[in-house]
Amino acid sequence: MTAGGTRVTERHRQLAPQLGVLEKQLRDLALWSERVPDAAALASSQPFALDTLTLVEWLQFIFLPRMRQLVDTAAPLPGTCGIAPMAEEYFRGLGVGSDALLAVLAAIDEILSSPPEAH
Image (cartoon, rainbow, N blue to C red; front, top):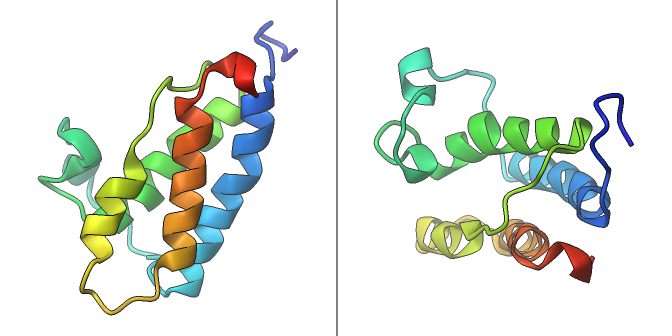
């Protein structure tokens, strides 16, 4: 339990290290940016912020911080996730060795999309 009374689940425990692996993969592929997009770009209401950010920016500046916050506070996690197919399309033809990155995104999708009692 956390101070707020929410419960750390097996899904939280499985997701936490995968978020670290995702960050490492982005850094290893030199996709990590030190430049934070402006507030308007981060405030997009479109899925994956496609109208204002690249997928990599969305992963770094929206997805990772939000998922880490949910894990750190043991808040309820999303019930579905489908980032890997989007990433496969994004990286197709870019000439980036993205297999390990795609694998961690698929693992995150599986953790978040499976029933909580399965974990």
